[in-house]
Image 1 (spheres, rainbow over the protein chains, first blue to last red):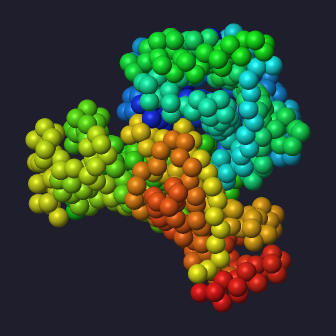
Image 2: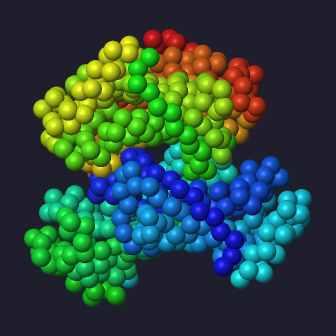
Length: 141
Length: 141
Length: 141
Length: 141
């Protein structure tokens, strides 16, 4: 298993729809919350990437909805780095209420420069901090 | 090719993020706009389903982001029924700015009853209107 | 000072816009997070209202934006019941990053029944729990 | 009456909540849609402001909710410039379904420079296009 993180959040009323459950696009936002937390725990908050003119653009996202989530539910987002290179990162996510798996998803991202083009993070000073993470990631798989 | 519809929308400022492009979860909302429009054009607005205690729950959603979209872009959402049974519908979507393909996605839905369980739409009076659609859909593939 | 509550939240990337700061409508969602927390602390989670067929419809909302908030900011929402009767509740909110006041707002709500009409909460069993809250509120002002 | 514009939009499913009506923060987003349209009709799309390093930061927003709006409702947003100087603009909004007034609101904005500080738009070349608008606005009140 690769590097991972868990984070908790409570469902907001704004996130529900008239079906009485959470509107499905919100899960992608929760995935981002999980991803942010994982980077923060690796001491690589996403703000550090942006300070260097680096972005992490989403190129693919998917989610399987297994059970509905409701207003005020207390959720756990389990986020994991599934694959990582100096150009691309794949995250996987699982959303739980207690031990019940509610949804699972995946996002694929590429590092981009200020012009919005795919770039190699080895050209940036953040690489010094990212390299050990990447090596740890590859060792653990 | 199956039943399809096109709809236009303009990117809202609220839909952008600090990367200067549209935040990725919004595409799922645009897909819903496309799907709503397709049902409306089939004279089966989604409100008719809900009046009968029927819902169409998303069980899977995915999107590939090819090019970024920006505030004020004028987009065309091309929505198509890819597969349809009396229990399940698969839609595919393509998002264009003029002739440029920006993103493409898919959502899978099941019909659910008031209790939120998977149901067969043949048990509902809307079936009389939905059946010819389904047959047309199957004939055209 | 009336009944109040504080709650913390971290700014999500999804909440920013291309100006590089939080899009202004999100503050209303944070106010709702604060309000939910206040009710929960009073042992009156909003889900209890809805179980009885009661809603709390927003009739007015306003916000003054003093300083911008940014992605990953750790915010404190201070929520207070400003006025309360058996028909109407006014909440006020203040958003802080550490000791800095970033925004302040107000929302006014009326209790509504299942038909969406203004109603008196004294006609519902939740009144037994709400009455002491209301009395405490009025005593403290 | 000052300069104004009308724009139409259809309520998205994503905009509803479990009360079965539109969640209240979405009206602020619709106001932005109205404001964008008004600027576009004045041949001053907001993108032109941003190209010059100018922003229009919201300092105050408010809304009165008169009647609920529902999924699929076809709405008209009536947007008007209520006051305008070279530093500050006040917009007012009214949301209608056919002739029924559903909500009305107001937002106050200041022009800001790249550093996020309040600025005078007379220092920017866009002033040449904005000045006649401002004069027309002041003449019509």
